[in-house]
Image 1 (cartoon, helix red, strand yellow):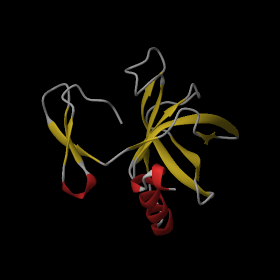
Image 2: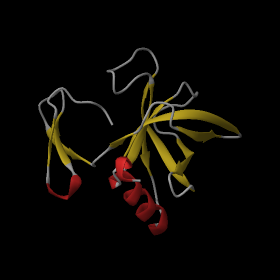
Image 3: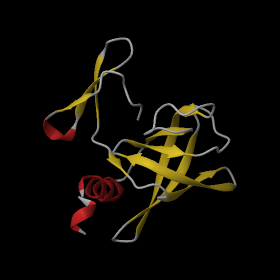
Image 4: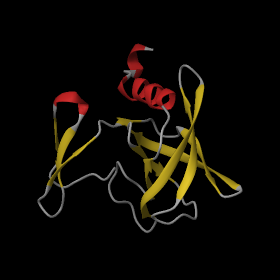
Length: 137
């Protein structure tokens, strides 16, 4: 979810290896960047916040939002998958909040979330969406 200084190298299975700021190597799931304006809804308590989805993977997403959330909280992300028009309701744990400044062009002010306890159907639909090439719709 964070753009690491060391860049990433694609690995087998769709994962990539990234080097974080401490020099440690770690893997992260393949991410699909979405066009600006791709919306979703983040449900925080009784309130629904419209958010823009910057990127999404099978494990989480980066949301452009100023929703009042804190790291460690779990909320519900409603994401409409196109072109199938299937809506997923994904439990999303907030892992990082960056509301002060843009981190990079790929990660403006926003919230990084990790999906929790996905059922098999949601996992399969999300995986299919993440790997689909939008130019071949």
